[in-house]
Image (cartoon, rainbow, N blue to C red):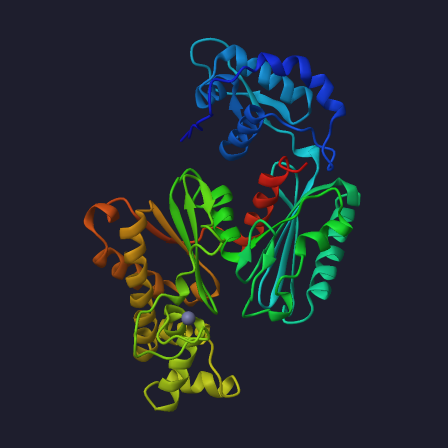
Length: 427
Ligand SMILES: [Zn+2]
């Protein structure tokens, strides 16, 4: 499905013809040409919707065919667009298609999790060329974690035959509240040493040609799902991450919605039980305190110790006296009634909050990701039931509730796209 963009007014692209040659000399810090607003809109359309013909572009940008011919000509001349074969004929000659020139530079996407670093190098079109994952501890000093990130990026660049200066974009997701304009974490509970640490400046010292973009981990997952996963072509959806905590990324009109301060979607601290356990935020009965991975594991341990579940008691013995949410999932898959009840309770509470979000926001889809989705389909089916039962009929008529299509890769895909969307915006 093609989605059009609204431009402020009809664009006078003829002007660009005369200045295109001039702009070849006037490059940004990363060596990429500076683009005019209309050109940027055309580039973003092709990025999101794949190769397009000039006729498609004219229609989507709502400008004349002649203007698009001039505009596309400039972008081909600037090496941003390339011709990639022919589309379907609508009567006459088959139209030539325009796509992003994949060779214009490398893009790195980094997903820093609480216990891991996932990193990928992509071409300028966003296709992943190399990927790397390794365990990490984000509680240590940010310099140490970021030095490792830098080292991995350099290694991947070398493997692809690139130099450090060929990296033109860098996106990174971190597990905590991010003030997006400055790219700083603000009082992150999981990684206190990173509070107000200048991540962008630190990375830019090593890669001065880039304009690193830093965002919250759930936001980059939502962006990944939007650009490369199940959310392609869906204007409004939400992405829920269920892991150690519960968070949500909001896609509105095809773009991430961060709110006024960057904290939109922080649904883990919505109260679902005023008499519930105290959350690490200090309040009782937050959704993540009663329904995320640690709560599922804790309830599993209680069931094992009280003799309600033999399977979980055996698993707990094998695991040196502890259980994980995944173990509870294994017990549920083996038919354990207590384990199934624990997962169903968790799904009902999450579904109850999602129903509220559906009534409030009316998304077309909800994608669910994060480590806890590995516990199986029982969780998804109870979340689905609870959401559909509680939300209004019209809002659920075409609502899709699915596990993330990109699974554990949503973060790196999103970090790459975040970088790509910032690549022409630097000065
Ligand atoms: Zn809380």
